[in-house]
Length: 553
Image (cartoon, rainbow, N blue to C red; front, side):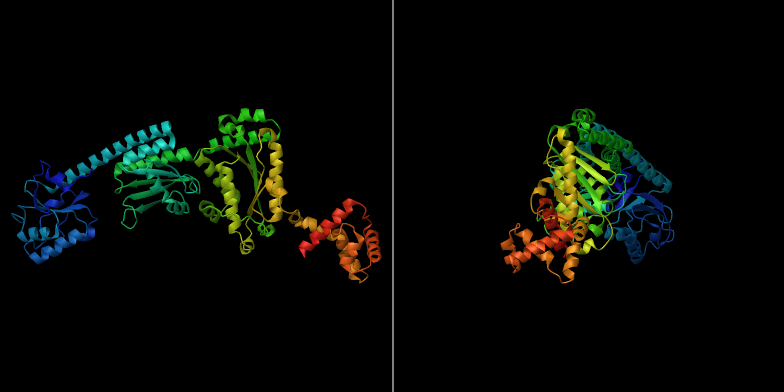
């Protein structure tokens, strides 16, 4: 620990005597400073032992001494050393009384003890304390490294908590608690999620201090540090202690930050290598070679292929093509998903990657994420945390999206298609299912569509496509042009006839005309379009065209 007034008093070579402030000798001394100025306060930083001979002081004036001592105490001076036998044979009573009133320690320095000896003693003690701190810091670094290699982040956190005599917690990119040490700190760490999320908004590296000021429900002081080398932190470290960290504890925390960064922020070359393996595994699965894919996957992705999985295909579409779906899901998104959806800055595919990988890391499950040109392909365990997090994130995006937001800017919007659960042998079919679900999501203005949902609801929303409408307009244009001349209502007659499945009497009754009139109109439709209404394909195309133009109107 740093030198204190007590340690200086007990220094056998200095022969110091306490004349006031006996109960405040345990205060640390940052430096020993000599000044004969009547007012040395402007040159003080706090924590100094001020050494004087009262050369320019009226040390026998009680009022002057009260003002002098009060200013010193207010500036953070921790003690006053008075050399006797120079200007005064003993410390004047006015100064002693003023020091006692203010509670400022007053030390009598004998004539044979030069101020330089006191300065050297303080300097040597500070240097020894710093050496001890550095030595302890290196020892802590070795222990933390050993625990990180043996027990991973959990072992490192346990060692760090022991080093700082407090607790430590690791958070993932979403602000969720990944691990704590000791275990009882889990509830305390969970209360800091909002603070961790605010820390993520700041450029890395970033840190903040929470609590320790008596303004919170907890008495501890918590330091939060971002982890990672990229633009955005990938995780965060919390360290809770009863008081501010000392030098040795600070070394331990910095070592933990470096080690956790190495643990959580893998090297670029390792990430690239894993991604290449992931690409190879995906290509083999899609090529119908599941056994080769399992061999290449090894321990990295092998467990993912032992149970049913889902393929997720995501891409971005222009805001101008996004429509707010009336049939959007009504599920209530989780708080974590809402927080992630609110942070939509940057690449939507990158944000989805972060959500999926964070969820998989928290649950300890494998997930294969492959960027594929303008798409993102994810292979994740069915019913696992990654698929659940993807769905919740999409629901939160859908809940946050409004018509005003869709027209406010020109950034891309995320759309996601998810396959049904399959095994490795059916990966190619799953990829096709995910693409089909993705196509439906684009057409319906949805963020997230699962393949199982394609068979539910109506096929009519699928007609809400510019290409389909263009086809419908081209097919029915001759009939609309005919009706525009006032020579008959062929479009309404065709719609009534098709809706009644070709039943002449029922359709004619709906129109309020004779069935022979309706027969004549249907012959005119065939003549104008050059198609036979006896052909079921023609009737289907005309009905869908009528529905497409009706929905457009």
